[in-house]
Amino acid sequence: MGIDRGSAPAEPARGPGGHAWRSWRRLRGVVLPCAALVAVTWSWRHPEVLLPNANYIEVNDVPGTTALVGMTVGDLGAEAPAVTLRSARPRMVTPLPTGVSVEVLVCRDTVSGQPIFSARGSLQAQCAGVEQVHDAVLDLSDETEDQLVLVVRSRGPHRLMITGLDVSYSAGWQRGHQSVGPTVVADFSGRAQSDAMGIS
Image (cartoon, rainbow, N blue to C red; front, side, top):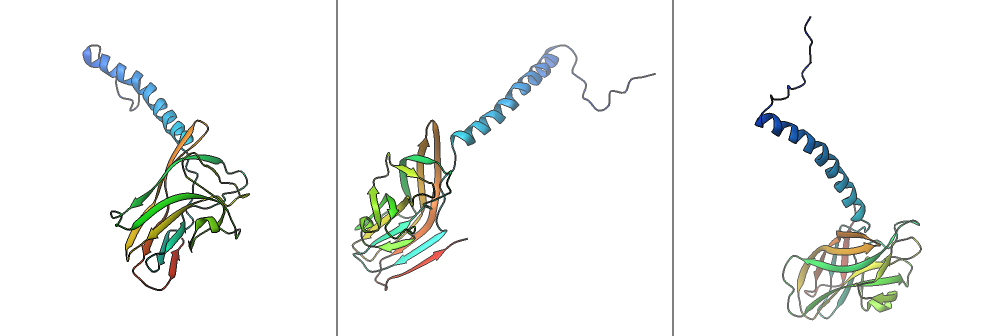
């Protein structure tokens, strides 16, 4: 009576072809677990911890205005981590016009107790403390209202679009990089002050 080995592929006969087959089987047994470990380690070492506070924010005002736009949520829960910021770069859709400056700053605990969505004037008047991004520790717990805020100043009738921020940060030996924040349209062409926001 014959033996049915099912559909298992027969191993090639001995020789160069057979040696290559056995080498691949051994290599596959090492490569696949290693690939899975790398994927898990990457996710752990590169966490995504920042959340935007909106999807779209449009600000309209006259030249000479300073517009403030909150780019991240200030609190993520009691157990949320604190991260050390390395950089936060606005993603400009078009080159920055002459007479316009764009800066990202850290706002510590808003004076109103509410996160900034859009506002005008000095950021220092809105926050208990203001810091530069590099090496600032951003507390993401619900005990604070720490935020990344976009500060846009225009001396002329300009319109610009920014599609969020590229943010790099660390937490211990973990490293993270995220694209976060709403798409911002800032129009200083002379219309009366008005803002629009989209959240989904």
